[in-house]
Length: 344
Image 1 (cartoon, rainbow, N blue to C red):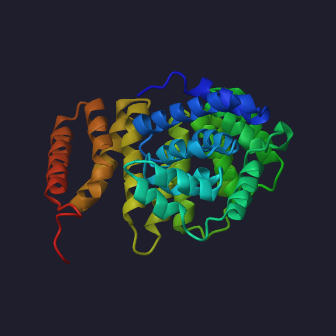
Image 2: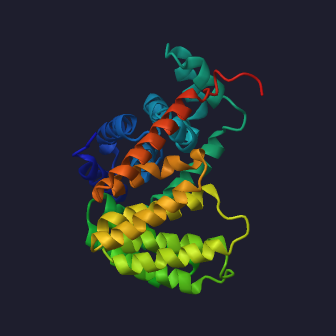
Image 3: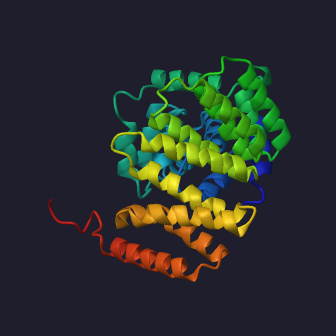
């Protein structure tokens, strides 16, 4: 599903965060309803500030009848059930909320009452939570962090502004591993792969783990993906070989996740190789790793392997990979679901 109004809706929410007026409540309710619909239809997991900001701005008006809007938003998915705070429902007063629910005939009436009538959910606790949300969503733009501005700009499709904000944010603090990781991930999300490569190389240079560690290999594999997306095949292949050498020195290698990332990059590099010769070298190397792997490890790799074989018109490998994928699909279909499985 494509929501053409998502960026515009968030722009309005962001503006309303800095210009709060009593007469805005009908608009805020509409925006929360629209965000709830968007999440229900297009966001099966996760929770971002576009929903929580809408919920907070409605909650700050403290109208008990908005409990139903908040309950709907909270129950979109597993992630919203955990992350959309119950106190949204209680900002009109805990007693007023309980009275409203008891007087209604909502299908979730008993469940809501069970959730909101705990002795822990006092008006004082709700007020403390509201104060925390006001710090998270300040009314003055000057109180926002550059990191927040960067993410907001990205939601509005302002790539260059988002890049500048995030780069400035990273420059203002020590270049720790966490900060560099945040910076390179954000740059890559924006499509600035060359810049993300430079940041990842800086993170690798700062890494103080032993040379043979899986952390170092993980950073190298991340670099491979960034270099591939930046169109730098030569460096990507060189980094992949370095990661392979590092992993070969690790006791008990390989592990499933790291193995899948390592082997998958061989196949992902095939279509961007400068010629068929180098592409075939990568395909053959990836194929060598596949032949040594147990069937249950292949699910995260086979689609990329099939695409690489198709790219080089290697029908023998293509047929074998397709057969392996069919076996994997059959194995998954035969696996009992958690509900149907008997006692272990």
